[in-house]
Length: 96
Image 1: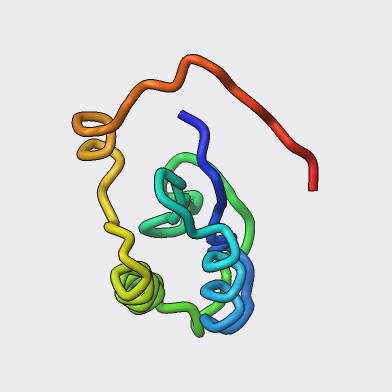
Image 2: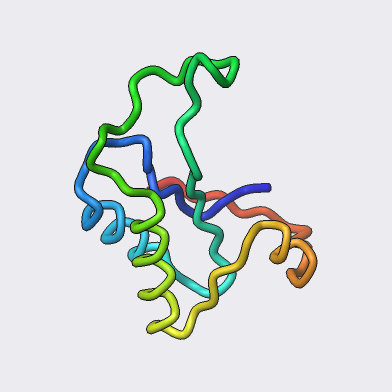
């Protein structure tokens, strides 16, 4: 699975910064990667320090989905996208 954009929700930047960057990549069929938490030693890995106490991933997701809806886009879970989506047989990578 390849995604079109990551919310980069491991960075300690204001929610508005995450949203602004994600909206630049919003398009039908785009896949935005978002994390539901931050892995720590208790998870068997060490991702290092988390993004800080200021990032509310739930609120970030709610705001992003609301903006997507206003743009006529529909948010789906990965499992739902795999059921209703279309397999892509060609891959085109671009460097920005």
